[in-house]
Image (cartoon, rainbow, N blue to C red; front, side, top):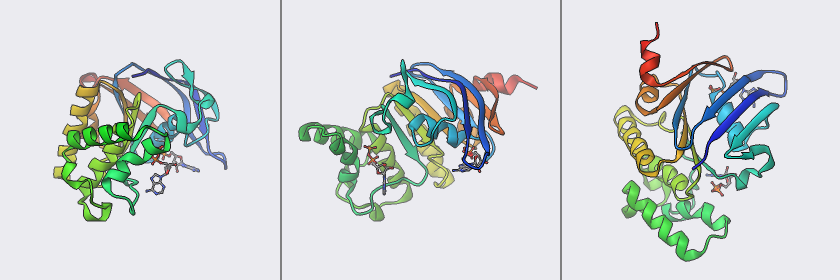
Length: 226
Ligand code: ADP
Ligand code: ADP
């Protein structure tokens, strides 16, 4: 588990567009924070800077005591879940789950143990030998979530993970993510444009607009404001 801190962070894309402006945000160890706001407001850019997928133009981001720009993206103790699953189509579910650990030269027995546990947690044990094309959308999203869980990261990042699912599955997966947070107690940062999702999942909701944080408060406090 770890704290995450953004200090005076700015992001200007090549071409000059300022996607994030003067972002200051302290996320507590184990906290579930939702970044919400209209499309294009800078949510995804914020996550991507934290993940090391985007350069920071100025300011500082820390995970625990470490500045992220001093840690290679592959070495950062985070795992990201995307809306488009990002599964390897030619690999089985088991291989998809194991891949990141294999890259990190995790011992085989440990990979087998963690893969098995993760599959059990998500109820996908029966699917371990299938390929992604043989899965439903909901099953694929479970595998994508499994790829993050199996790494046992200090911080989970979610970028609109449920927006490709139908309404029923969205509700179901939302509950699973909430249960996962309950069980692991890991810091989670979750991006969505869906207010219901934000209100149900977030211990704290950060509202962004035009690259700027407009409000940051617990769901009930946000409701109370005029
Ligand atoms: P959100 O996740 O809130 O929808 P993003 O962080 O993806 O917003 O994007 C914020 C703004 O930055 C948008 O206006 C978007 O068009 C712009 N943007 C995103 N990526 C790039 C890029 N690689 N180059 C230039 N502009 C970008
Ligand atoms: P790790 O868990 O070590 O990050 P991943 O399997 O998640 O390993 O990803 C390794 C690299 O492959 C990353 O740069 C990631 O963006 C990329 N990647 C992930 N999924 C796919 C995919 N389906 N097709 C192509 N590249 C991918």
